Image 1 (cartoon, chains in turn red, orange):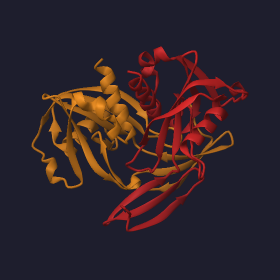
Image 2: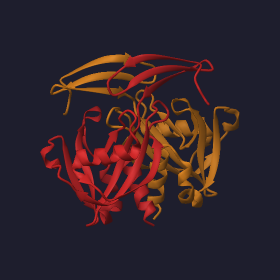
Image 3: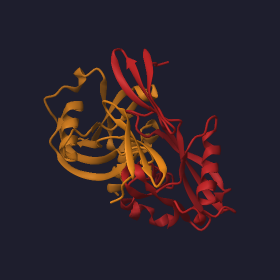
Image 4: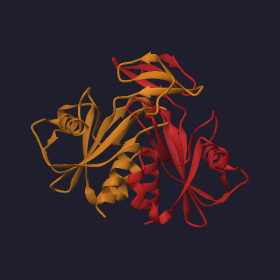
Length: 167
Length: 167
């Protein structure tokens, strides 16, 4: 097991903490993050659901895959299913993992699992009531031509993994 | 311009700071990061150069695109060219931007520019002297089959953007 010699917590936050670790005399500043999921959700009509929301850190509205942070003890698949229903009111369908990756391994522990769900169904939740998150639908066939509209790494990686899996 | 009502610095670090911003009564914890670059470097023999290095935050050696953090006032292209030569001793070639994205826009400002350089040349630097970073070469034709060996988001996104640009 690869482990640091020492570790001290320098910031104790709500969403994440920051620790400074010592590794053979080198100091590393690290954002502790519980991990996350993102979902490529395709319905039986061949439409993909994305979300548009204000991302305060970058001062912009971004178009992204539905995504969320793991709650304590939560399995990635269960978390993804919960987030998709809460965020855009989609449930059911056939699920599988497209891939998993570290989002920024130079300074953060976050590992993200990307799932594909096909034949997903509109549930009882009404995402239009959520003023903060706007659901946006794209036809699956448009994805390759519309990549330049995306500015979020997980969304670009997740959709390209999806397209790759279809060839 | 979209801006917070208030902002206070809660952690002042070496690689990054953390601020807490107030937005219409909502608090947002944000990692301030200067931005970064990553490079898809292909030589005239059709080989891609990756780097394998210990990423302490995730307790693992990862295989990644060469990449680095912007220095103050530095342009992304100049930064990418500097990093590529410092990290793996490659210089010259024909450069263009493949894309740019936010790595984790939910809690961090980092914007990353991904460049492609073709016909890159081995320079005088000797990357083998660098014990921390091992250069790894893949044939360009192998990339699609070897994606499952990658666990880093920028590397997956960058290489898929490259493959997409070749079709």
